[in-house]
Image (cartoon, rainbow, N blue to C red; front, top):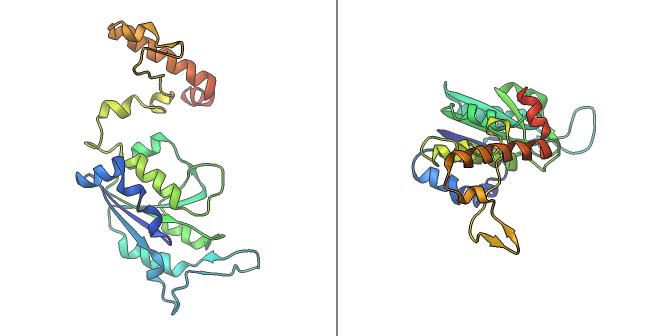
Length: 223
């Protein structure tokens, strides 16, 4: 997979993409990530990318020209362009799995007060990571890249992500490690039994219990 990210703040991505699973995925050749400062596509003598809104109002609005030119420069026949915006559809694990099937993703990170409405015509999809406002689309882009990359074949063991939260509409079951007893809190006996069938049944039941208690909305979505 290849990912291009259009942003005004490319340095924000440096640490995130040079650590942990995303770094290993790049080293293995499972994903190529390119960060582009779309200010460089501006035709303004001072590389301006925004302007005041028609009709008045606070803040500055991202203009069409730099982003239209940037997307057209990067786009291929197999590209999927994603606009990161609070207006988009809520992001969840099913979408992450769907996006792993794409060969080329282009993420547009908004900033300032917003973007010219005509920029939406560039996007195949608009995504929001939650009902709150961030300074820009950089952090959402990091979230999507991380969540998608770890699902690519050969990045981590398939059994690892199959058992994680939000697969099968359930939160993850409780996990424990050594010591067996810590400050009088004991590991459930069934996990020490060696009976894999009983352990699997216990984990499924605990995942259901946790989901009913903390995220009952997930179970409703599964109906």
